[in-house]
Amino acid sequence: MNPNLDLLHRYPFERLNELKAGITPPAHLKPIALSIGEPKHLSPAFVKQALVDNIDQVAVYPATKGGQPLRETIAEWLQQRFNLNAQGIDADHQVLPVNGTREALFAFTQAVIDPQRRPIVVSPNPFYQIYEGAALLAGAELHYLDCTAENNFIADLSAVPEQVWQRCQLLHLCSPGNPTGAVISIEQFQQAIALADKYDFIIASDECYSEVYLQEDSPPPGLLQACAEIGRDDYSRCVVFHSLSKRSNLPGLRSGFVAGDSQVLKAFLRYRTYHGCAMSTPVQIASTAAWADETHVIDNRSQYREKFAAVTEILRPVLDFPEPQASFYLWPKTPIADTDFAKQLFAEQNVTLLPGQYLSRDTASGNPGENRVRLALVAETEECIEAALRIKQFVQGLS
Image: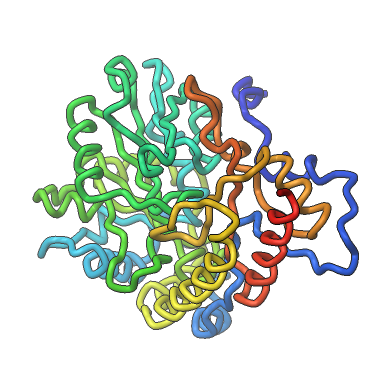
């Protein structure tokens, strides 16, 4: 077996199940899970219909590169959403459909890491666990950048030692952040680009929450947008990851894309040819329909906006949390240890949250997820309000 498998940490939800083991919550309270970021809003009917109408296409092997209509639709969406320059993005060489960002982030790391050169992957902390697992299995070391209230929950790239940058092959950025909801600015993206040029590494910007934001007139910027503003239209060393899971409430479709540096994507496509992960043709057709429509996305944001307003009004008096700019998470501090908070809340109120330390790693400064919990406001508004009321009652009972 691959010895690097032994380096993997237990997945957060495995640890959460162990934490809850043996506890019998109150039977009269309906269970509410705010632990997993799985969108629960209705999937668009027209996307499901596109799948049905094209189901006969399962008889055809799909191309690993994806079909031209899907790639062109994605390129058009990127052009409009991120204000790219007139030449936009090349659908043939700078866009590659993938089966969701999780699959792509993992495979991308395997493709770009050279294990012979003592590689380092730089990651925010807390982080999406695939960043770490993929790096370890690729033979890389991790360098974690704590995202705390002191730095507005944005990784401080200036805090990275010179010797780390010299060995860095891949920098992970996540904006909007999971679990913090913090948004990286254009200037911060451009700082990362300058460092990538200086030290010759690739930037992987996970932007799968970019379409869930609270101010309709303030969409989060992206890495390609930062490139466009400095005339970097080849997007050298820059790759972004997007998905329909959050944007369009289609987590089970497993559909997304990567876009950016054509030379990097050329190598990634070569890897994927052997990886065997082409998107099925019915999913490609349904995805094309989803990326071409913004009406359902605007409605989706409206639902999250209503939900956040209601939940934050209930919880603000009893919990301290950063006001998220985007994503569907809250990241509150806990008055007791995060694991105790989650365990006792489940036992008393039948509400499940994810302890923050399960999403983070210990560094010299401690664990930035410790004494915080992640709330995923993915259920319908009424259920989220009910969960918030139970959490408030629980917190008030602690004092």
